[in-house]
Length: 268
Ligand SMILES: C[S@@+](CC[C@H](N)C(=O)[O-])C[C@H]1O[C@@H](n2cnc3c(N)ncnc32)[C@H](O)[C@@H]1O
Image (cartoon, rainbow, N blue to C red; front, side, top):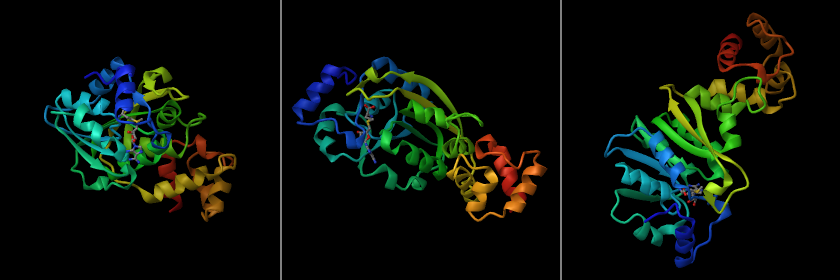
C-alpha cells in the first residue's frame, strides 16, 4: 500500500467518509522521497520503540514500522480508527488515543526516540514539553519552516526568541531540509521543514526560563525595562550587564543562552 500517493489518500478518505480536518492540522505527506529522508534521519536499531504524534492515515507510522521500528503512535482524531485496520495491518504499531499535549512524556524511559509530522497548531508547546521531559535521545520533527527557523535561530536575528532559547538549552537542533506545500494533501499555505534534535542530558531550568520569558515579553523594550516590569531589581540587572560587558540599553534578543545563564547567576 502506497500512502504517499495523493490518489490513494483521496480514495482512503472517500471510502472511510473522512475529510482532512483543519482543526487537527491534517496535512498528509504525499511525497515518498521526503518520507524516506525523514525515516533515514532517525537513528534507531531494529525493534526499538519510536514514539510518534499524529499518525494521520499512518504514512510515517507505516514507513517507520517497515524500516524495523516498533511504533507507539498517539492520535487525537478517533474518526481515523477504522482506517488503521487497513493502513497499518500486520505492522508492529500500538495506538494510543488522546491529546499529545496532555500525555505524560516523563513516563517514558530515557533514550527514547521521537518522530512526527506535527500538527502545526501544537508544534511549539509540544516540542517544549518533549524537551522538558528529558526522555529523548533523538527527535525528528516536521514543522512549519517559520517554526524551524525559530528553533535554530542565532542571537540578534529576527527569528530568535524564547522558543530558540528553549530548544537550544535542551538540544542541538539542525534544520535538515524544506518541503514545499505540494508535498502534502491537502496542501498547506506555507513551506515546512524537517528539524532533527539531539537532546543534551540537561534538566529543565525553571528560574532561567522565567527570566528569559520575562525578557522577551516586550521585545522592543530594553532588557532592563522588560525585567523591571517582571519584578527583577533594575539596579542589579544594570550591574550584571556591566559585569558581562553589555550595554544597559541592550535588548533581550542580543543575549546568547550563555549570557542569559550568566545574567541569572549574577542577579540571583
Ligand atoms: C500533519 S498531520 C500528520 C499525519 C501523518 N503523520 C502524515 O505524515 O501524513 C497531524 C496529525 O496529528 C493529529 N493531531 C492533531 N492534534 C493532535 C493532538 N493534540 N494530539 C495527538 N494528535 C493530534 C491529527 O489528527 C493528524 O493526524
